[in-house]
Length: 424
Ligand code: NIG
Ligand code: FE
Image 1 (cartoon, rainbow, N blue to C red):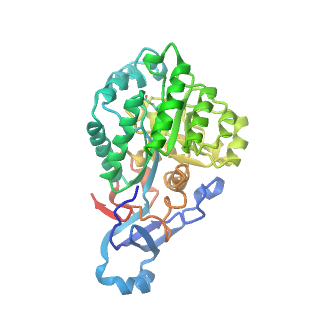
Image 2: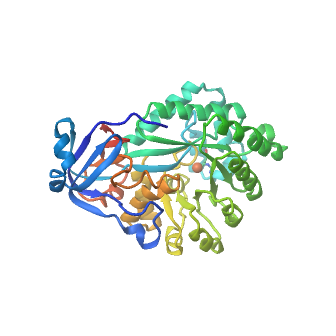
Image 3: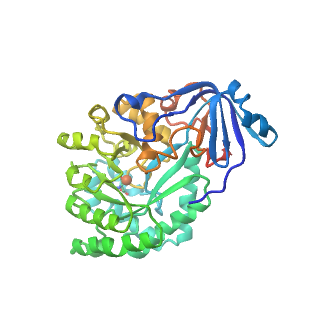
């Protein structure tokens, strides 16, 4: 979506400017630790792009800066930390209501899969979305997007997936488009018609897969309502064979691919890698033999530890094993009513540090440039380099390691999204 271009803006008085400058591809292995921090820095933005990022005293000497001094708006970061705006590369943005019954059942000891099999889970979110108007869904989505922006997130991947009929999936995608118009950040829309088989098709799964491949995908693509197709590949949802069919249909209609894999049971990733998805999400469990091929591919593994936390799991994705194997790892919220009702990337980073033993540097790379790569946006988003989109987050902390350190808080005091400044 084309965004209104921000005016000329300079961010000054930055103790640590975490640029993450580097090549546009995803970072792996030791490169996941490289932050390229500039101390006592400033960032200059114009026309929605970053013009320069440097030491503040050098910035003041920049010829462009001198020439345009009068029309430059200044934001004083108060000695804080500035990072690239977070890229939340996995959210189920469109839903109608929280799922409090599931929440209480889980506290009482039932598992996610047991609750889902008994008619709770994703299916219990369908009625609300089916009866909601597009405007209602859009206004809920917009409210969530502003909470995300408040926490430093400037790029969001947003899925449909709680309608599961042609009409309500398209309505959900239209709601995403409507919300995107009212938000300064960047939205990437994903069709998740293949979230689960809805009750109407329970005796004919193949017919539902056809509904997805021959109606939802072609119409979402034709109306330019989605860039991606996602599938929940899991024993309670879709098989790897069905996922491969849906992938093929998505590609045939010019859509890019991503999938939920290995949330509860391991998946044959090789079968799916042939379709070159941009991301495999969750990866709580995986087969070790798939790792070398995954590491050689451009597919990013998007880990979602807030879902593990909220489901009360003690086991988290084995990030250390993935990183040592050379897999490109990203982090995202998985914002959704069933397994991860949070918009906070800071919480996600904290959980990744304490539960998955990722370092503060790694979680920052995973929440910015690697998330951008998982959305095919590595050349535009995720690092602070001249020519890239002006997407920045300002925090009132003195050291980037405080981002995952302060639990449950929000240190963000300002964001710049496509050049547009919002203060908290
Ligand atoms: O990513 N796993 C599938 N989708 C969501 C959960 C959806 C729900 O329970 O509403 C997830 O965790
Ligand atoms: Fe998800």
